[in-house]
Length: 432
Image 1 (cartoon, rainbow, N blue to C red):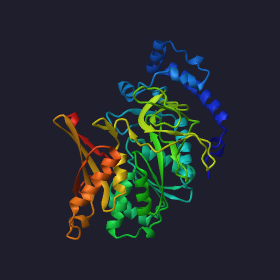
Image 2: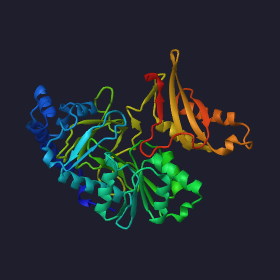
Image 3: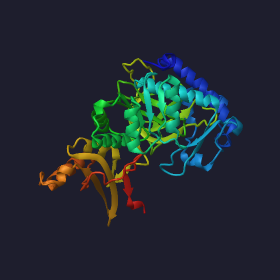
Image 4: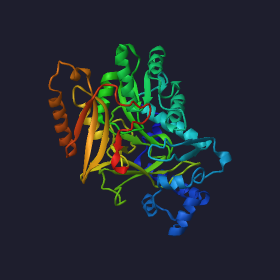
């Protein structure tokens, strides 16, 4: 099932020609209207009219969040403010927020691209969509709202938080599609169980989760606990919001909307392209944004591209689920670890709740990691005497996964903070 079959299934040679034409128009737009890019091009002696192939894009430098913040609030806008009909901002997870704008055409494109993502994940005009993302300056809720209305679905704009009310609305309004972060979906699943509500009495069919990295083990857990088909989607405020990429029902990679975004994958240290199929940092150039175009934006998200065709029939290049951010990489004893690796081990361990917190300290010259993990009530009861032995098994599994010893401390259920939005898993005291 497609929303725009002509664009989603376009032959690759035709799509590349379309990308080139749109890239040329974008380069001209930013040179004429964005002082940052005009100064950059002039300094490097780059003529935006000289681009004749997509490979020429590599001649241009990257754009970073720091560049966007330095132009706060409107310095990167490519149209007069009177043409901007929507102003939003990033969530500021890793620093000060960045301000983005949308023209009427930008909002039209945004609605259609999110409609593609929803349709690919199985949502139709017959569904009731509960949006549990924050409706503030964060782009997630509004993007999904536009897309869901575009396909004709019934939208419940409940926003994030107030879990008890979320569950009542889910029951009373017969929600069939849940949209939120995977960590909040897990908290909702936990609340459903504690309320004594039977999941089978709900109308849930689909869960579209994003805004944070999550493992395949977490997907399996959510599908099992909520009895849904769980799909991943990807977007970021700086290039539009949700709608950049999303999984189809095959759940084997996220289809990138390449007619609107040109993507590269680079080595985050050398800044050179990685070999085809290798993991690296995703870099995105917008091709149709009017108000806020960006060139070679470093997302800091780590993924790899899957160029082979998908059985769903879409010809769009796919990317794997984001495994983490370069900002979230934990470098310990010369080894790089991502919270998603920890999550995968815990989800595979019976008796452990997939709620955890990583604490990193430096003791003397040695860095140490401590994992606080919620365990089921039975582990604290007299029924299981060897809690220490259970923790030792988790330690062994973790050491096998990450390559160094991890201290594991069990904590009681509900003792760790729950997050309505993006989960914050790591406390690194070495930086203080």
